[in-house]
Length: 261
Length: 259
Image 1 (spheres, rainbow over the protein chains, first blue to last red):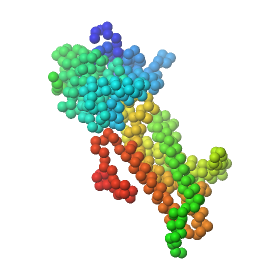
Image 2: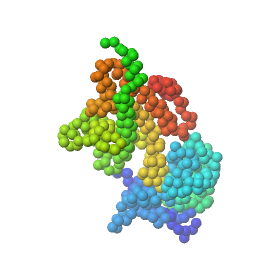
Image 3: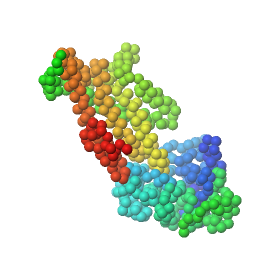
C-alpha cells in the first residue's frame, strides 16, 4: 500500500451532536486501499460514533463521508445535501462490512445461516454458491466444523469470528471494527485478533476502534488518537507509540496497559 | 325443573343441524377475524413505531379506542349504530356459492378491528423485545426495512408474540358469542333458538359450554405445537422441558418452568 493506492474512505469536516453534546467536532480522514487504521482514545472521545457514521448507522450533522467515491447517507440536491433514500443507503452499506462489540449474530440462524443470509437475500446469490462461499469463510476463521451450530452454543470468541465471516461474505471494500474484542473474555481475545491480522495481511482495508495496543503496534499502518471529538494525532505506529507529539496522546499512552505480543 | 340428562346427552352427541351450522360459523368467524386482525395488528405495530408522527398518532388513537370500549358496544355500534346514523349499512353479499349476510360481515369487521388493536400491542412488544443490535447488524449487511423485518426481526419477535397470540385466539373463539346480539346464528344464538323451542335452558347451555370447551381444548393442542415450533429458540442451549399435555391443559405450571 502506497500513497498512490486508491482512496477508499474520505471524511471531511464531519460533525455530529447528540442533542447539546457535540461528539464529533470536525473529523478529516483519508484511508487508502489496503490500509489498516486503528483509532484509539478514551471513552467519550467519539471514536465509536465516528466509525458508525461511516456506514450511516449514525447520521452526520455536517461534513461529508465518501466510501469508494460514493457519498454515504446523503445525496446532493440543488447544491444541498439531503438524506438519501433507504434503498440507496442499503446499497452503499453492502460494500462496508461492520463488526460489532456485541457480535450481534442472528440468534435464530446457524453459523452458516448467519453468513449466507445477506448474500442470498441482499445480493441475490444462488443458494448453493452462497453456501460454498460461506463454508470457505467459516474455514478461514477456523470454524469449519461449526456451520450448523447456533450462536448461543458458541463462545464469545467464536461468535465474533462468525460475525467477521458474515461481514466478509458481502465482499466489502472496507471493514469497520467497533471494539471487536471489548466484550470478550481475555483468553478469547487472541483468536479474534489473529483472524483480523490475517485479514490485514490479505490486504483488506480496515478501520479498527480498539484498546488492543499490541494489535495497533503490530498490524496498523496508522494509529489515530481521538480526543474530545477531534483527531489529535495520526501517525505510523512506531512514531505514535515511541514519539507521540500531542500531550493527550502522551497522557493516554501512559495510562493504557499494553496487551499482546 | 329437573335436569334432563337424556336430553343433554342427546343434544351433545347428536347435535341438530342448527348447532353444527353455529359451530361452523363460530369457527369461520374466529379464524377470519383472528387472521385479518393479526395482519391489522402487524401493520398497526409497524406504523406505531414509524418515524411519522401522524401515523403514530392514528395507531395510538385506534388502540386507545378499541381497547377502551367494550367489544359488545363496538359490535352494536358497527352494525346497528352506523346504519341508524345513515353512515353505512351492511348489505348481504352474494358470493355465488353462498350469501354473506350483512350482520356477519359487520360482526367479523368488529372482531377484526378489536383484535387488531390488541395484536398491535402484542406485536409491538414482540418487536421491541429484539435488541437494537439486530437491526444494526442487518442494516450493516445492506438489508432494507422490509427485508430485515421479515428475515431477522419478526422471526425473533415470534418467540414473544406466539404465546399471547394463542391466548387471543382462545378469547376470540368465546367472543364470537357476542355476535348473537346482532343476530349472527353462531353457537350461542343457535342454542338460544333451540331453548326457546324446548325450554331446556340448563341442558342446552351445558351443551354449548361443552362445545366451547372442546374447541378451546383442541386449540390448546395447536397452541402447544406452535409454541414448540416457533416459541422455543432452537438456538437456546438445552430446550426448556415441555410440560405434559394434561398439566398444560388444566393450567398447572411445571415446577421446572415456573421459575
